Image 1 (cartoon, rainbow, N blue to C red):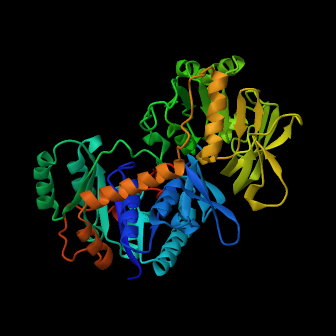
Image 2 (image 1 turned 60 degrees about the vertical axis):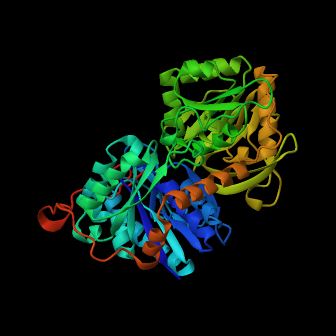
Image 3 (image 1 turned 180 degrees about the vertical axis):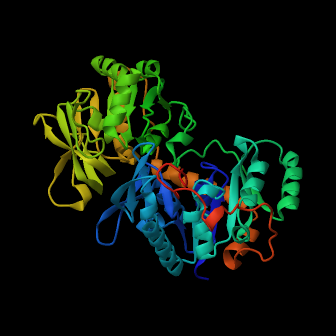
Length: 537
């Protein structure tokens, strides 16, 4: 078999497309199928760094990197050829095959869209020739009829590539039957002919009570529900969108020692790569919560300022909300503080930004004796280094800002060799209890994470806290992927799914009226899947 495919669409953003795609990928891998993931266009500030065959670093959505792990393969820039990274409600940076190429608004996105669509279609064609099966993930909802004319992510992709499509709905949101029926009924006949059936996600309770609804949905649509996936408390790693997080990450295990460690992560408006703190949350006795409340920062043992797509704008927000004052009070008391990427930049004395905010020179929080300057060219690379304790550390960098000046006596957080280059370099900074780094993913290095948390506990006065000696974040992620595969095997009609993948959509699927309206002139109004107008996460 070669070139089989399936599109996993959703009734809404965060319906479960990413995790279902990963679960199907893991199930197929177990069957011995050579499978790859694909998402034509992603809108997310959570990205991963991929190094291509020429050694060039590029970005894709973290969800596609996670799905690649489910397939047992290395990430590839073609898995997510178009990545939109919102910098505001009206504009996004466009990353094309890993490289930032433009910044667009809803107004000028239309002119760029043909190039993006052509790139996405070509990437999928290449993958289908190289893999037995490609499992494609849609974006937002295919029933966004104002965007259909320029769609190359949902049914536009399915039509072009002849992909059978399933629609997943999150029952937790309520109205799942109406949203599934409505999604189908708003598609035109040719699109409906590709939509083969449904999957219900996050179900809790007695499945017997749901079955009459599943039977009635089949009666009114002529399409089956391929399965009902139960809600599982252990599925929280690698969330596609930071907005999917609850207030507390994961399910904190009891402490290995006698005390808990409380970590407060500031939920910035343009937060990026919030997944950095998931490794901290995997440690027994570490409670990690996202917050926008100054009072919660005051009670924390460790405050984390995470990455952001817009450092200066989010620093202004910190000051306006009183969170900056809470952070300064925390640091003045000698309590631990960590800034990652944009959060590190906020800790500087001065930030000179002619690129993202175009505000020029603005004062930082002044907690580290460094100065930050923004460059037009983005740094995108994988990095490897050593912590002061001697622990090996791996990470990756995605940033425009860089340290342009620093106190020469300031200790580095890491020494290392970025991107496999020659010559040892210094990265990040430490001043008392204040830590900063541009490296994402560093806490996935187990030995470093344990040493860092030990220092945090000492500085915070939590002398009864002990990191567990054998926690492996890589193993935790692998267990999560296996759980996704188990849920697909146990709760979906995998024989029927395989038939779809192998043979395409069933013939003779009935049309459900009214179908998509046809405005005057035959052109659907709208701007296409633009920066903040749809097709996002």
